[in-house]
Image 1 (cartoon, rainbow, N blue to C red):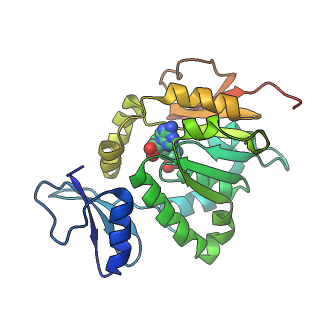
Image 2 (image 1 turned 90 degrees about the vertical axis):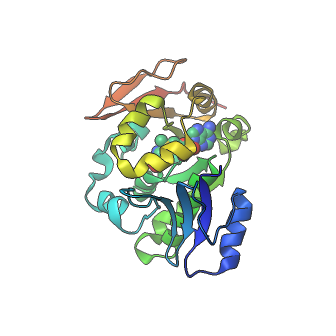
Length: 257
Ligand SMILES: C[S@@+](CC[C@H](N)C(=O)[O-])C[C@H]1O[C@@H](n2cnc3c(N)ncnc32)[C@H](O)[C@@H]1O
């Protein structure tokens, strides 16, 4: 991936070197001309930057301020589509596996409402950004308790869910893959283009859905653009439809194991 290098600004160079070794990316003092993106360690956070004239702003994970904080305070709480789809009701707070953690926005919504959320992410770049945001949240008084309910694992969720021990099965699995059609919508958000280019489409979503259906005790919820097709395979039990997003809900049969 010669279009991406690690850089660091006024930080301990050993930390940047460790990150470069972990991700198998070069650590650059001088950015090569072919390079379109950097993962930059600043004194405050890890940023994915797009280079060049007219480039959009950096991508980073921030659970303390910005859009995540705004949604936590004013986003509608349990009235939002996601908690409705996850089945939050009364005292019931499901244990959730977010099988496509990405930048952790959906996981943060559910953890803010009291759910324990295990986040699975396979892209090393998304994982590094999310780990950085989570570490900062753990240290910030406003959201420490929420961050304590969020656990991050780097893995392919299809494999991870396929090997889960029976007593560890989550109540709910959330699946939100990056689809080609979703990609077009995401491109409208200029700053997310780097994420789309570097991580790409999740063309194996059907296998992930199958593994999720095998692992969830109560339900699997799949996030899709409102008008998109369902993931092929099983048919959803119900759909929760918003202005631009839809959740396909797959209710699991009750088992008495
Ligand atoms: C559209 S993004 C998810 C955004 C996320 N819902 C959020 O709120 O930020 C999709 C993410 O899922 C990850 N992903 C897709 N399939 C996966 C799998 N089988 N295992 C782990 N991660 C996966 C991709 O690497 C990507 O980061």
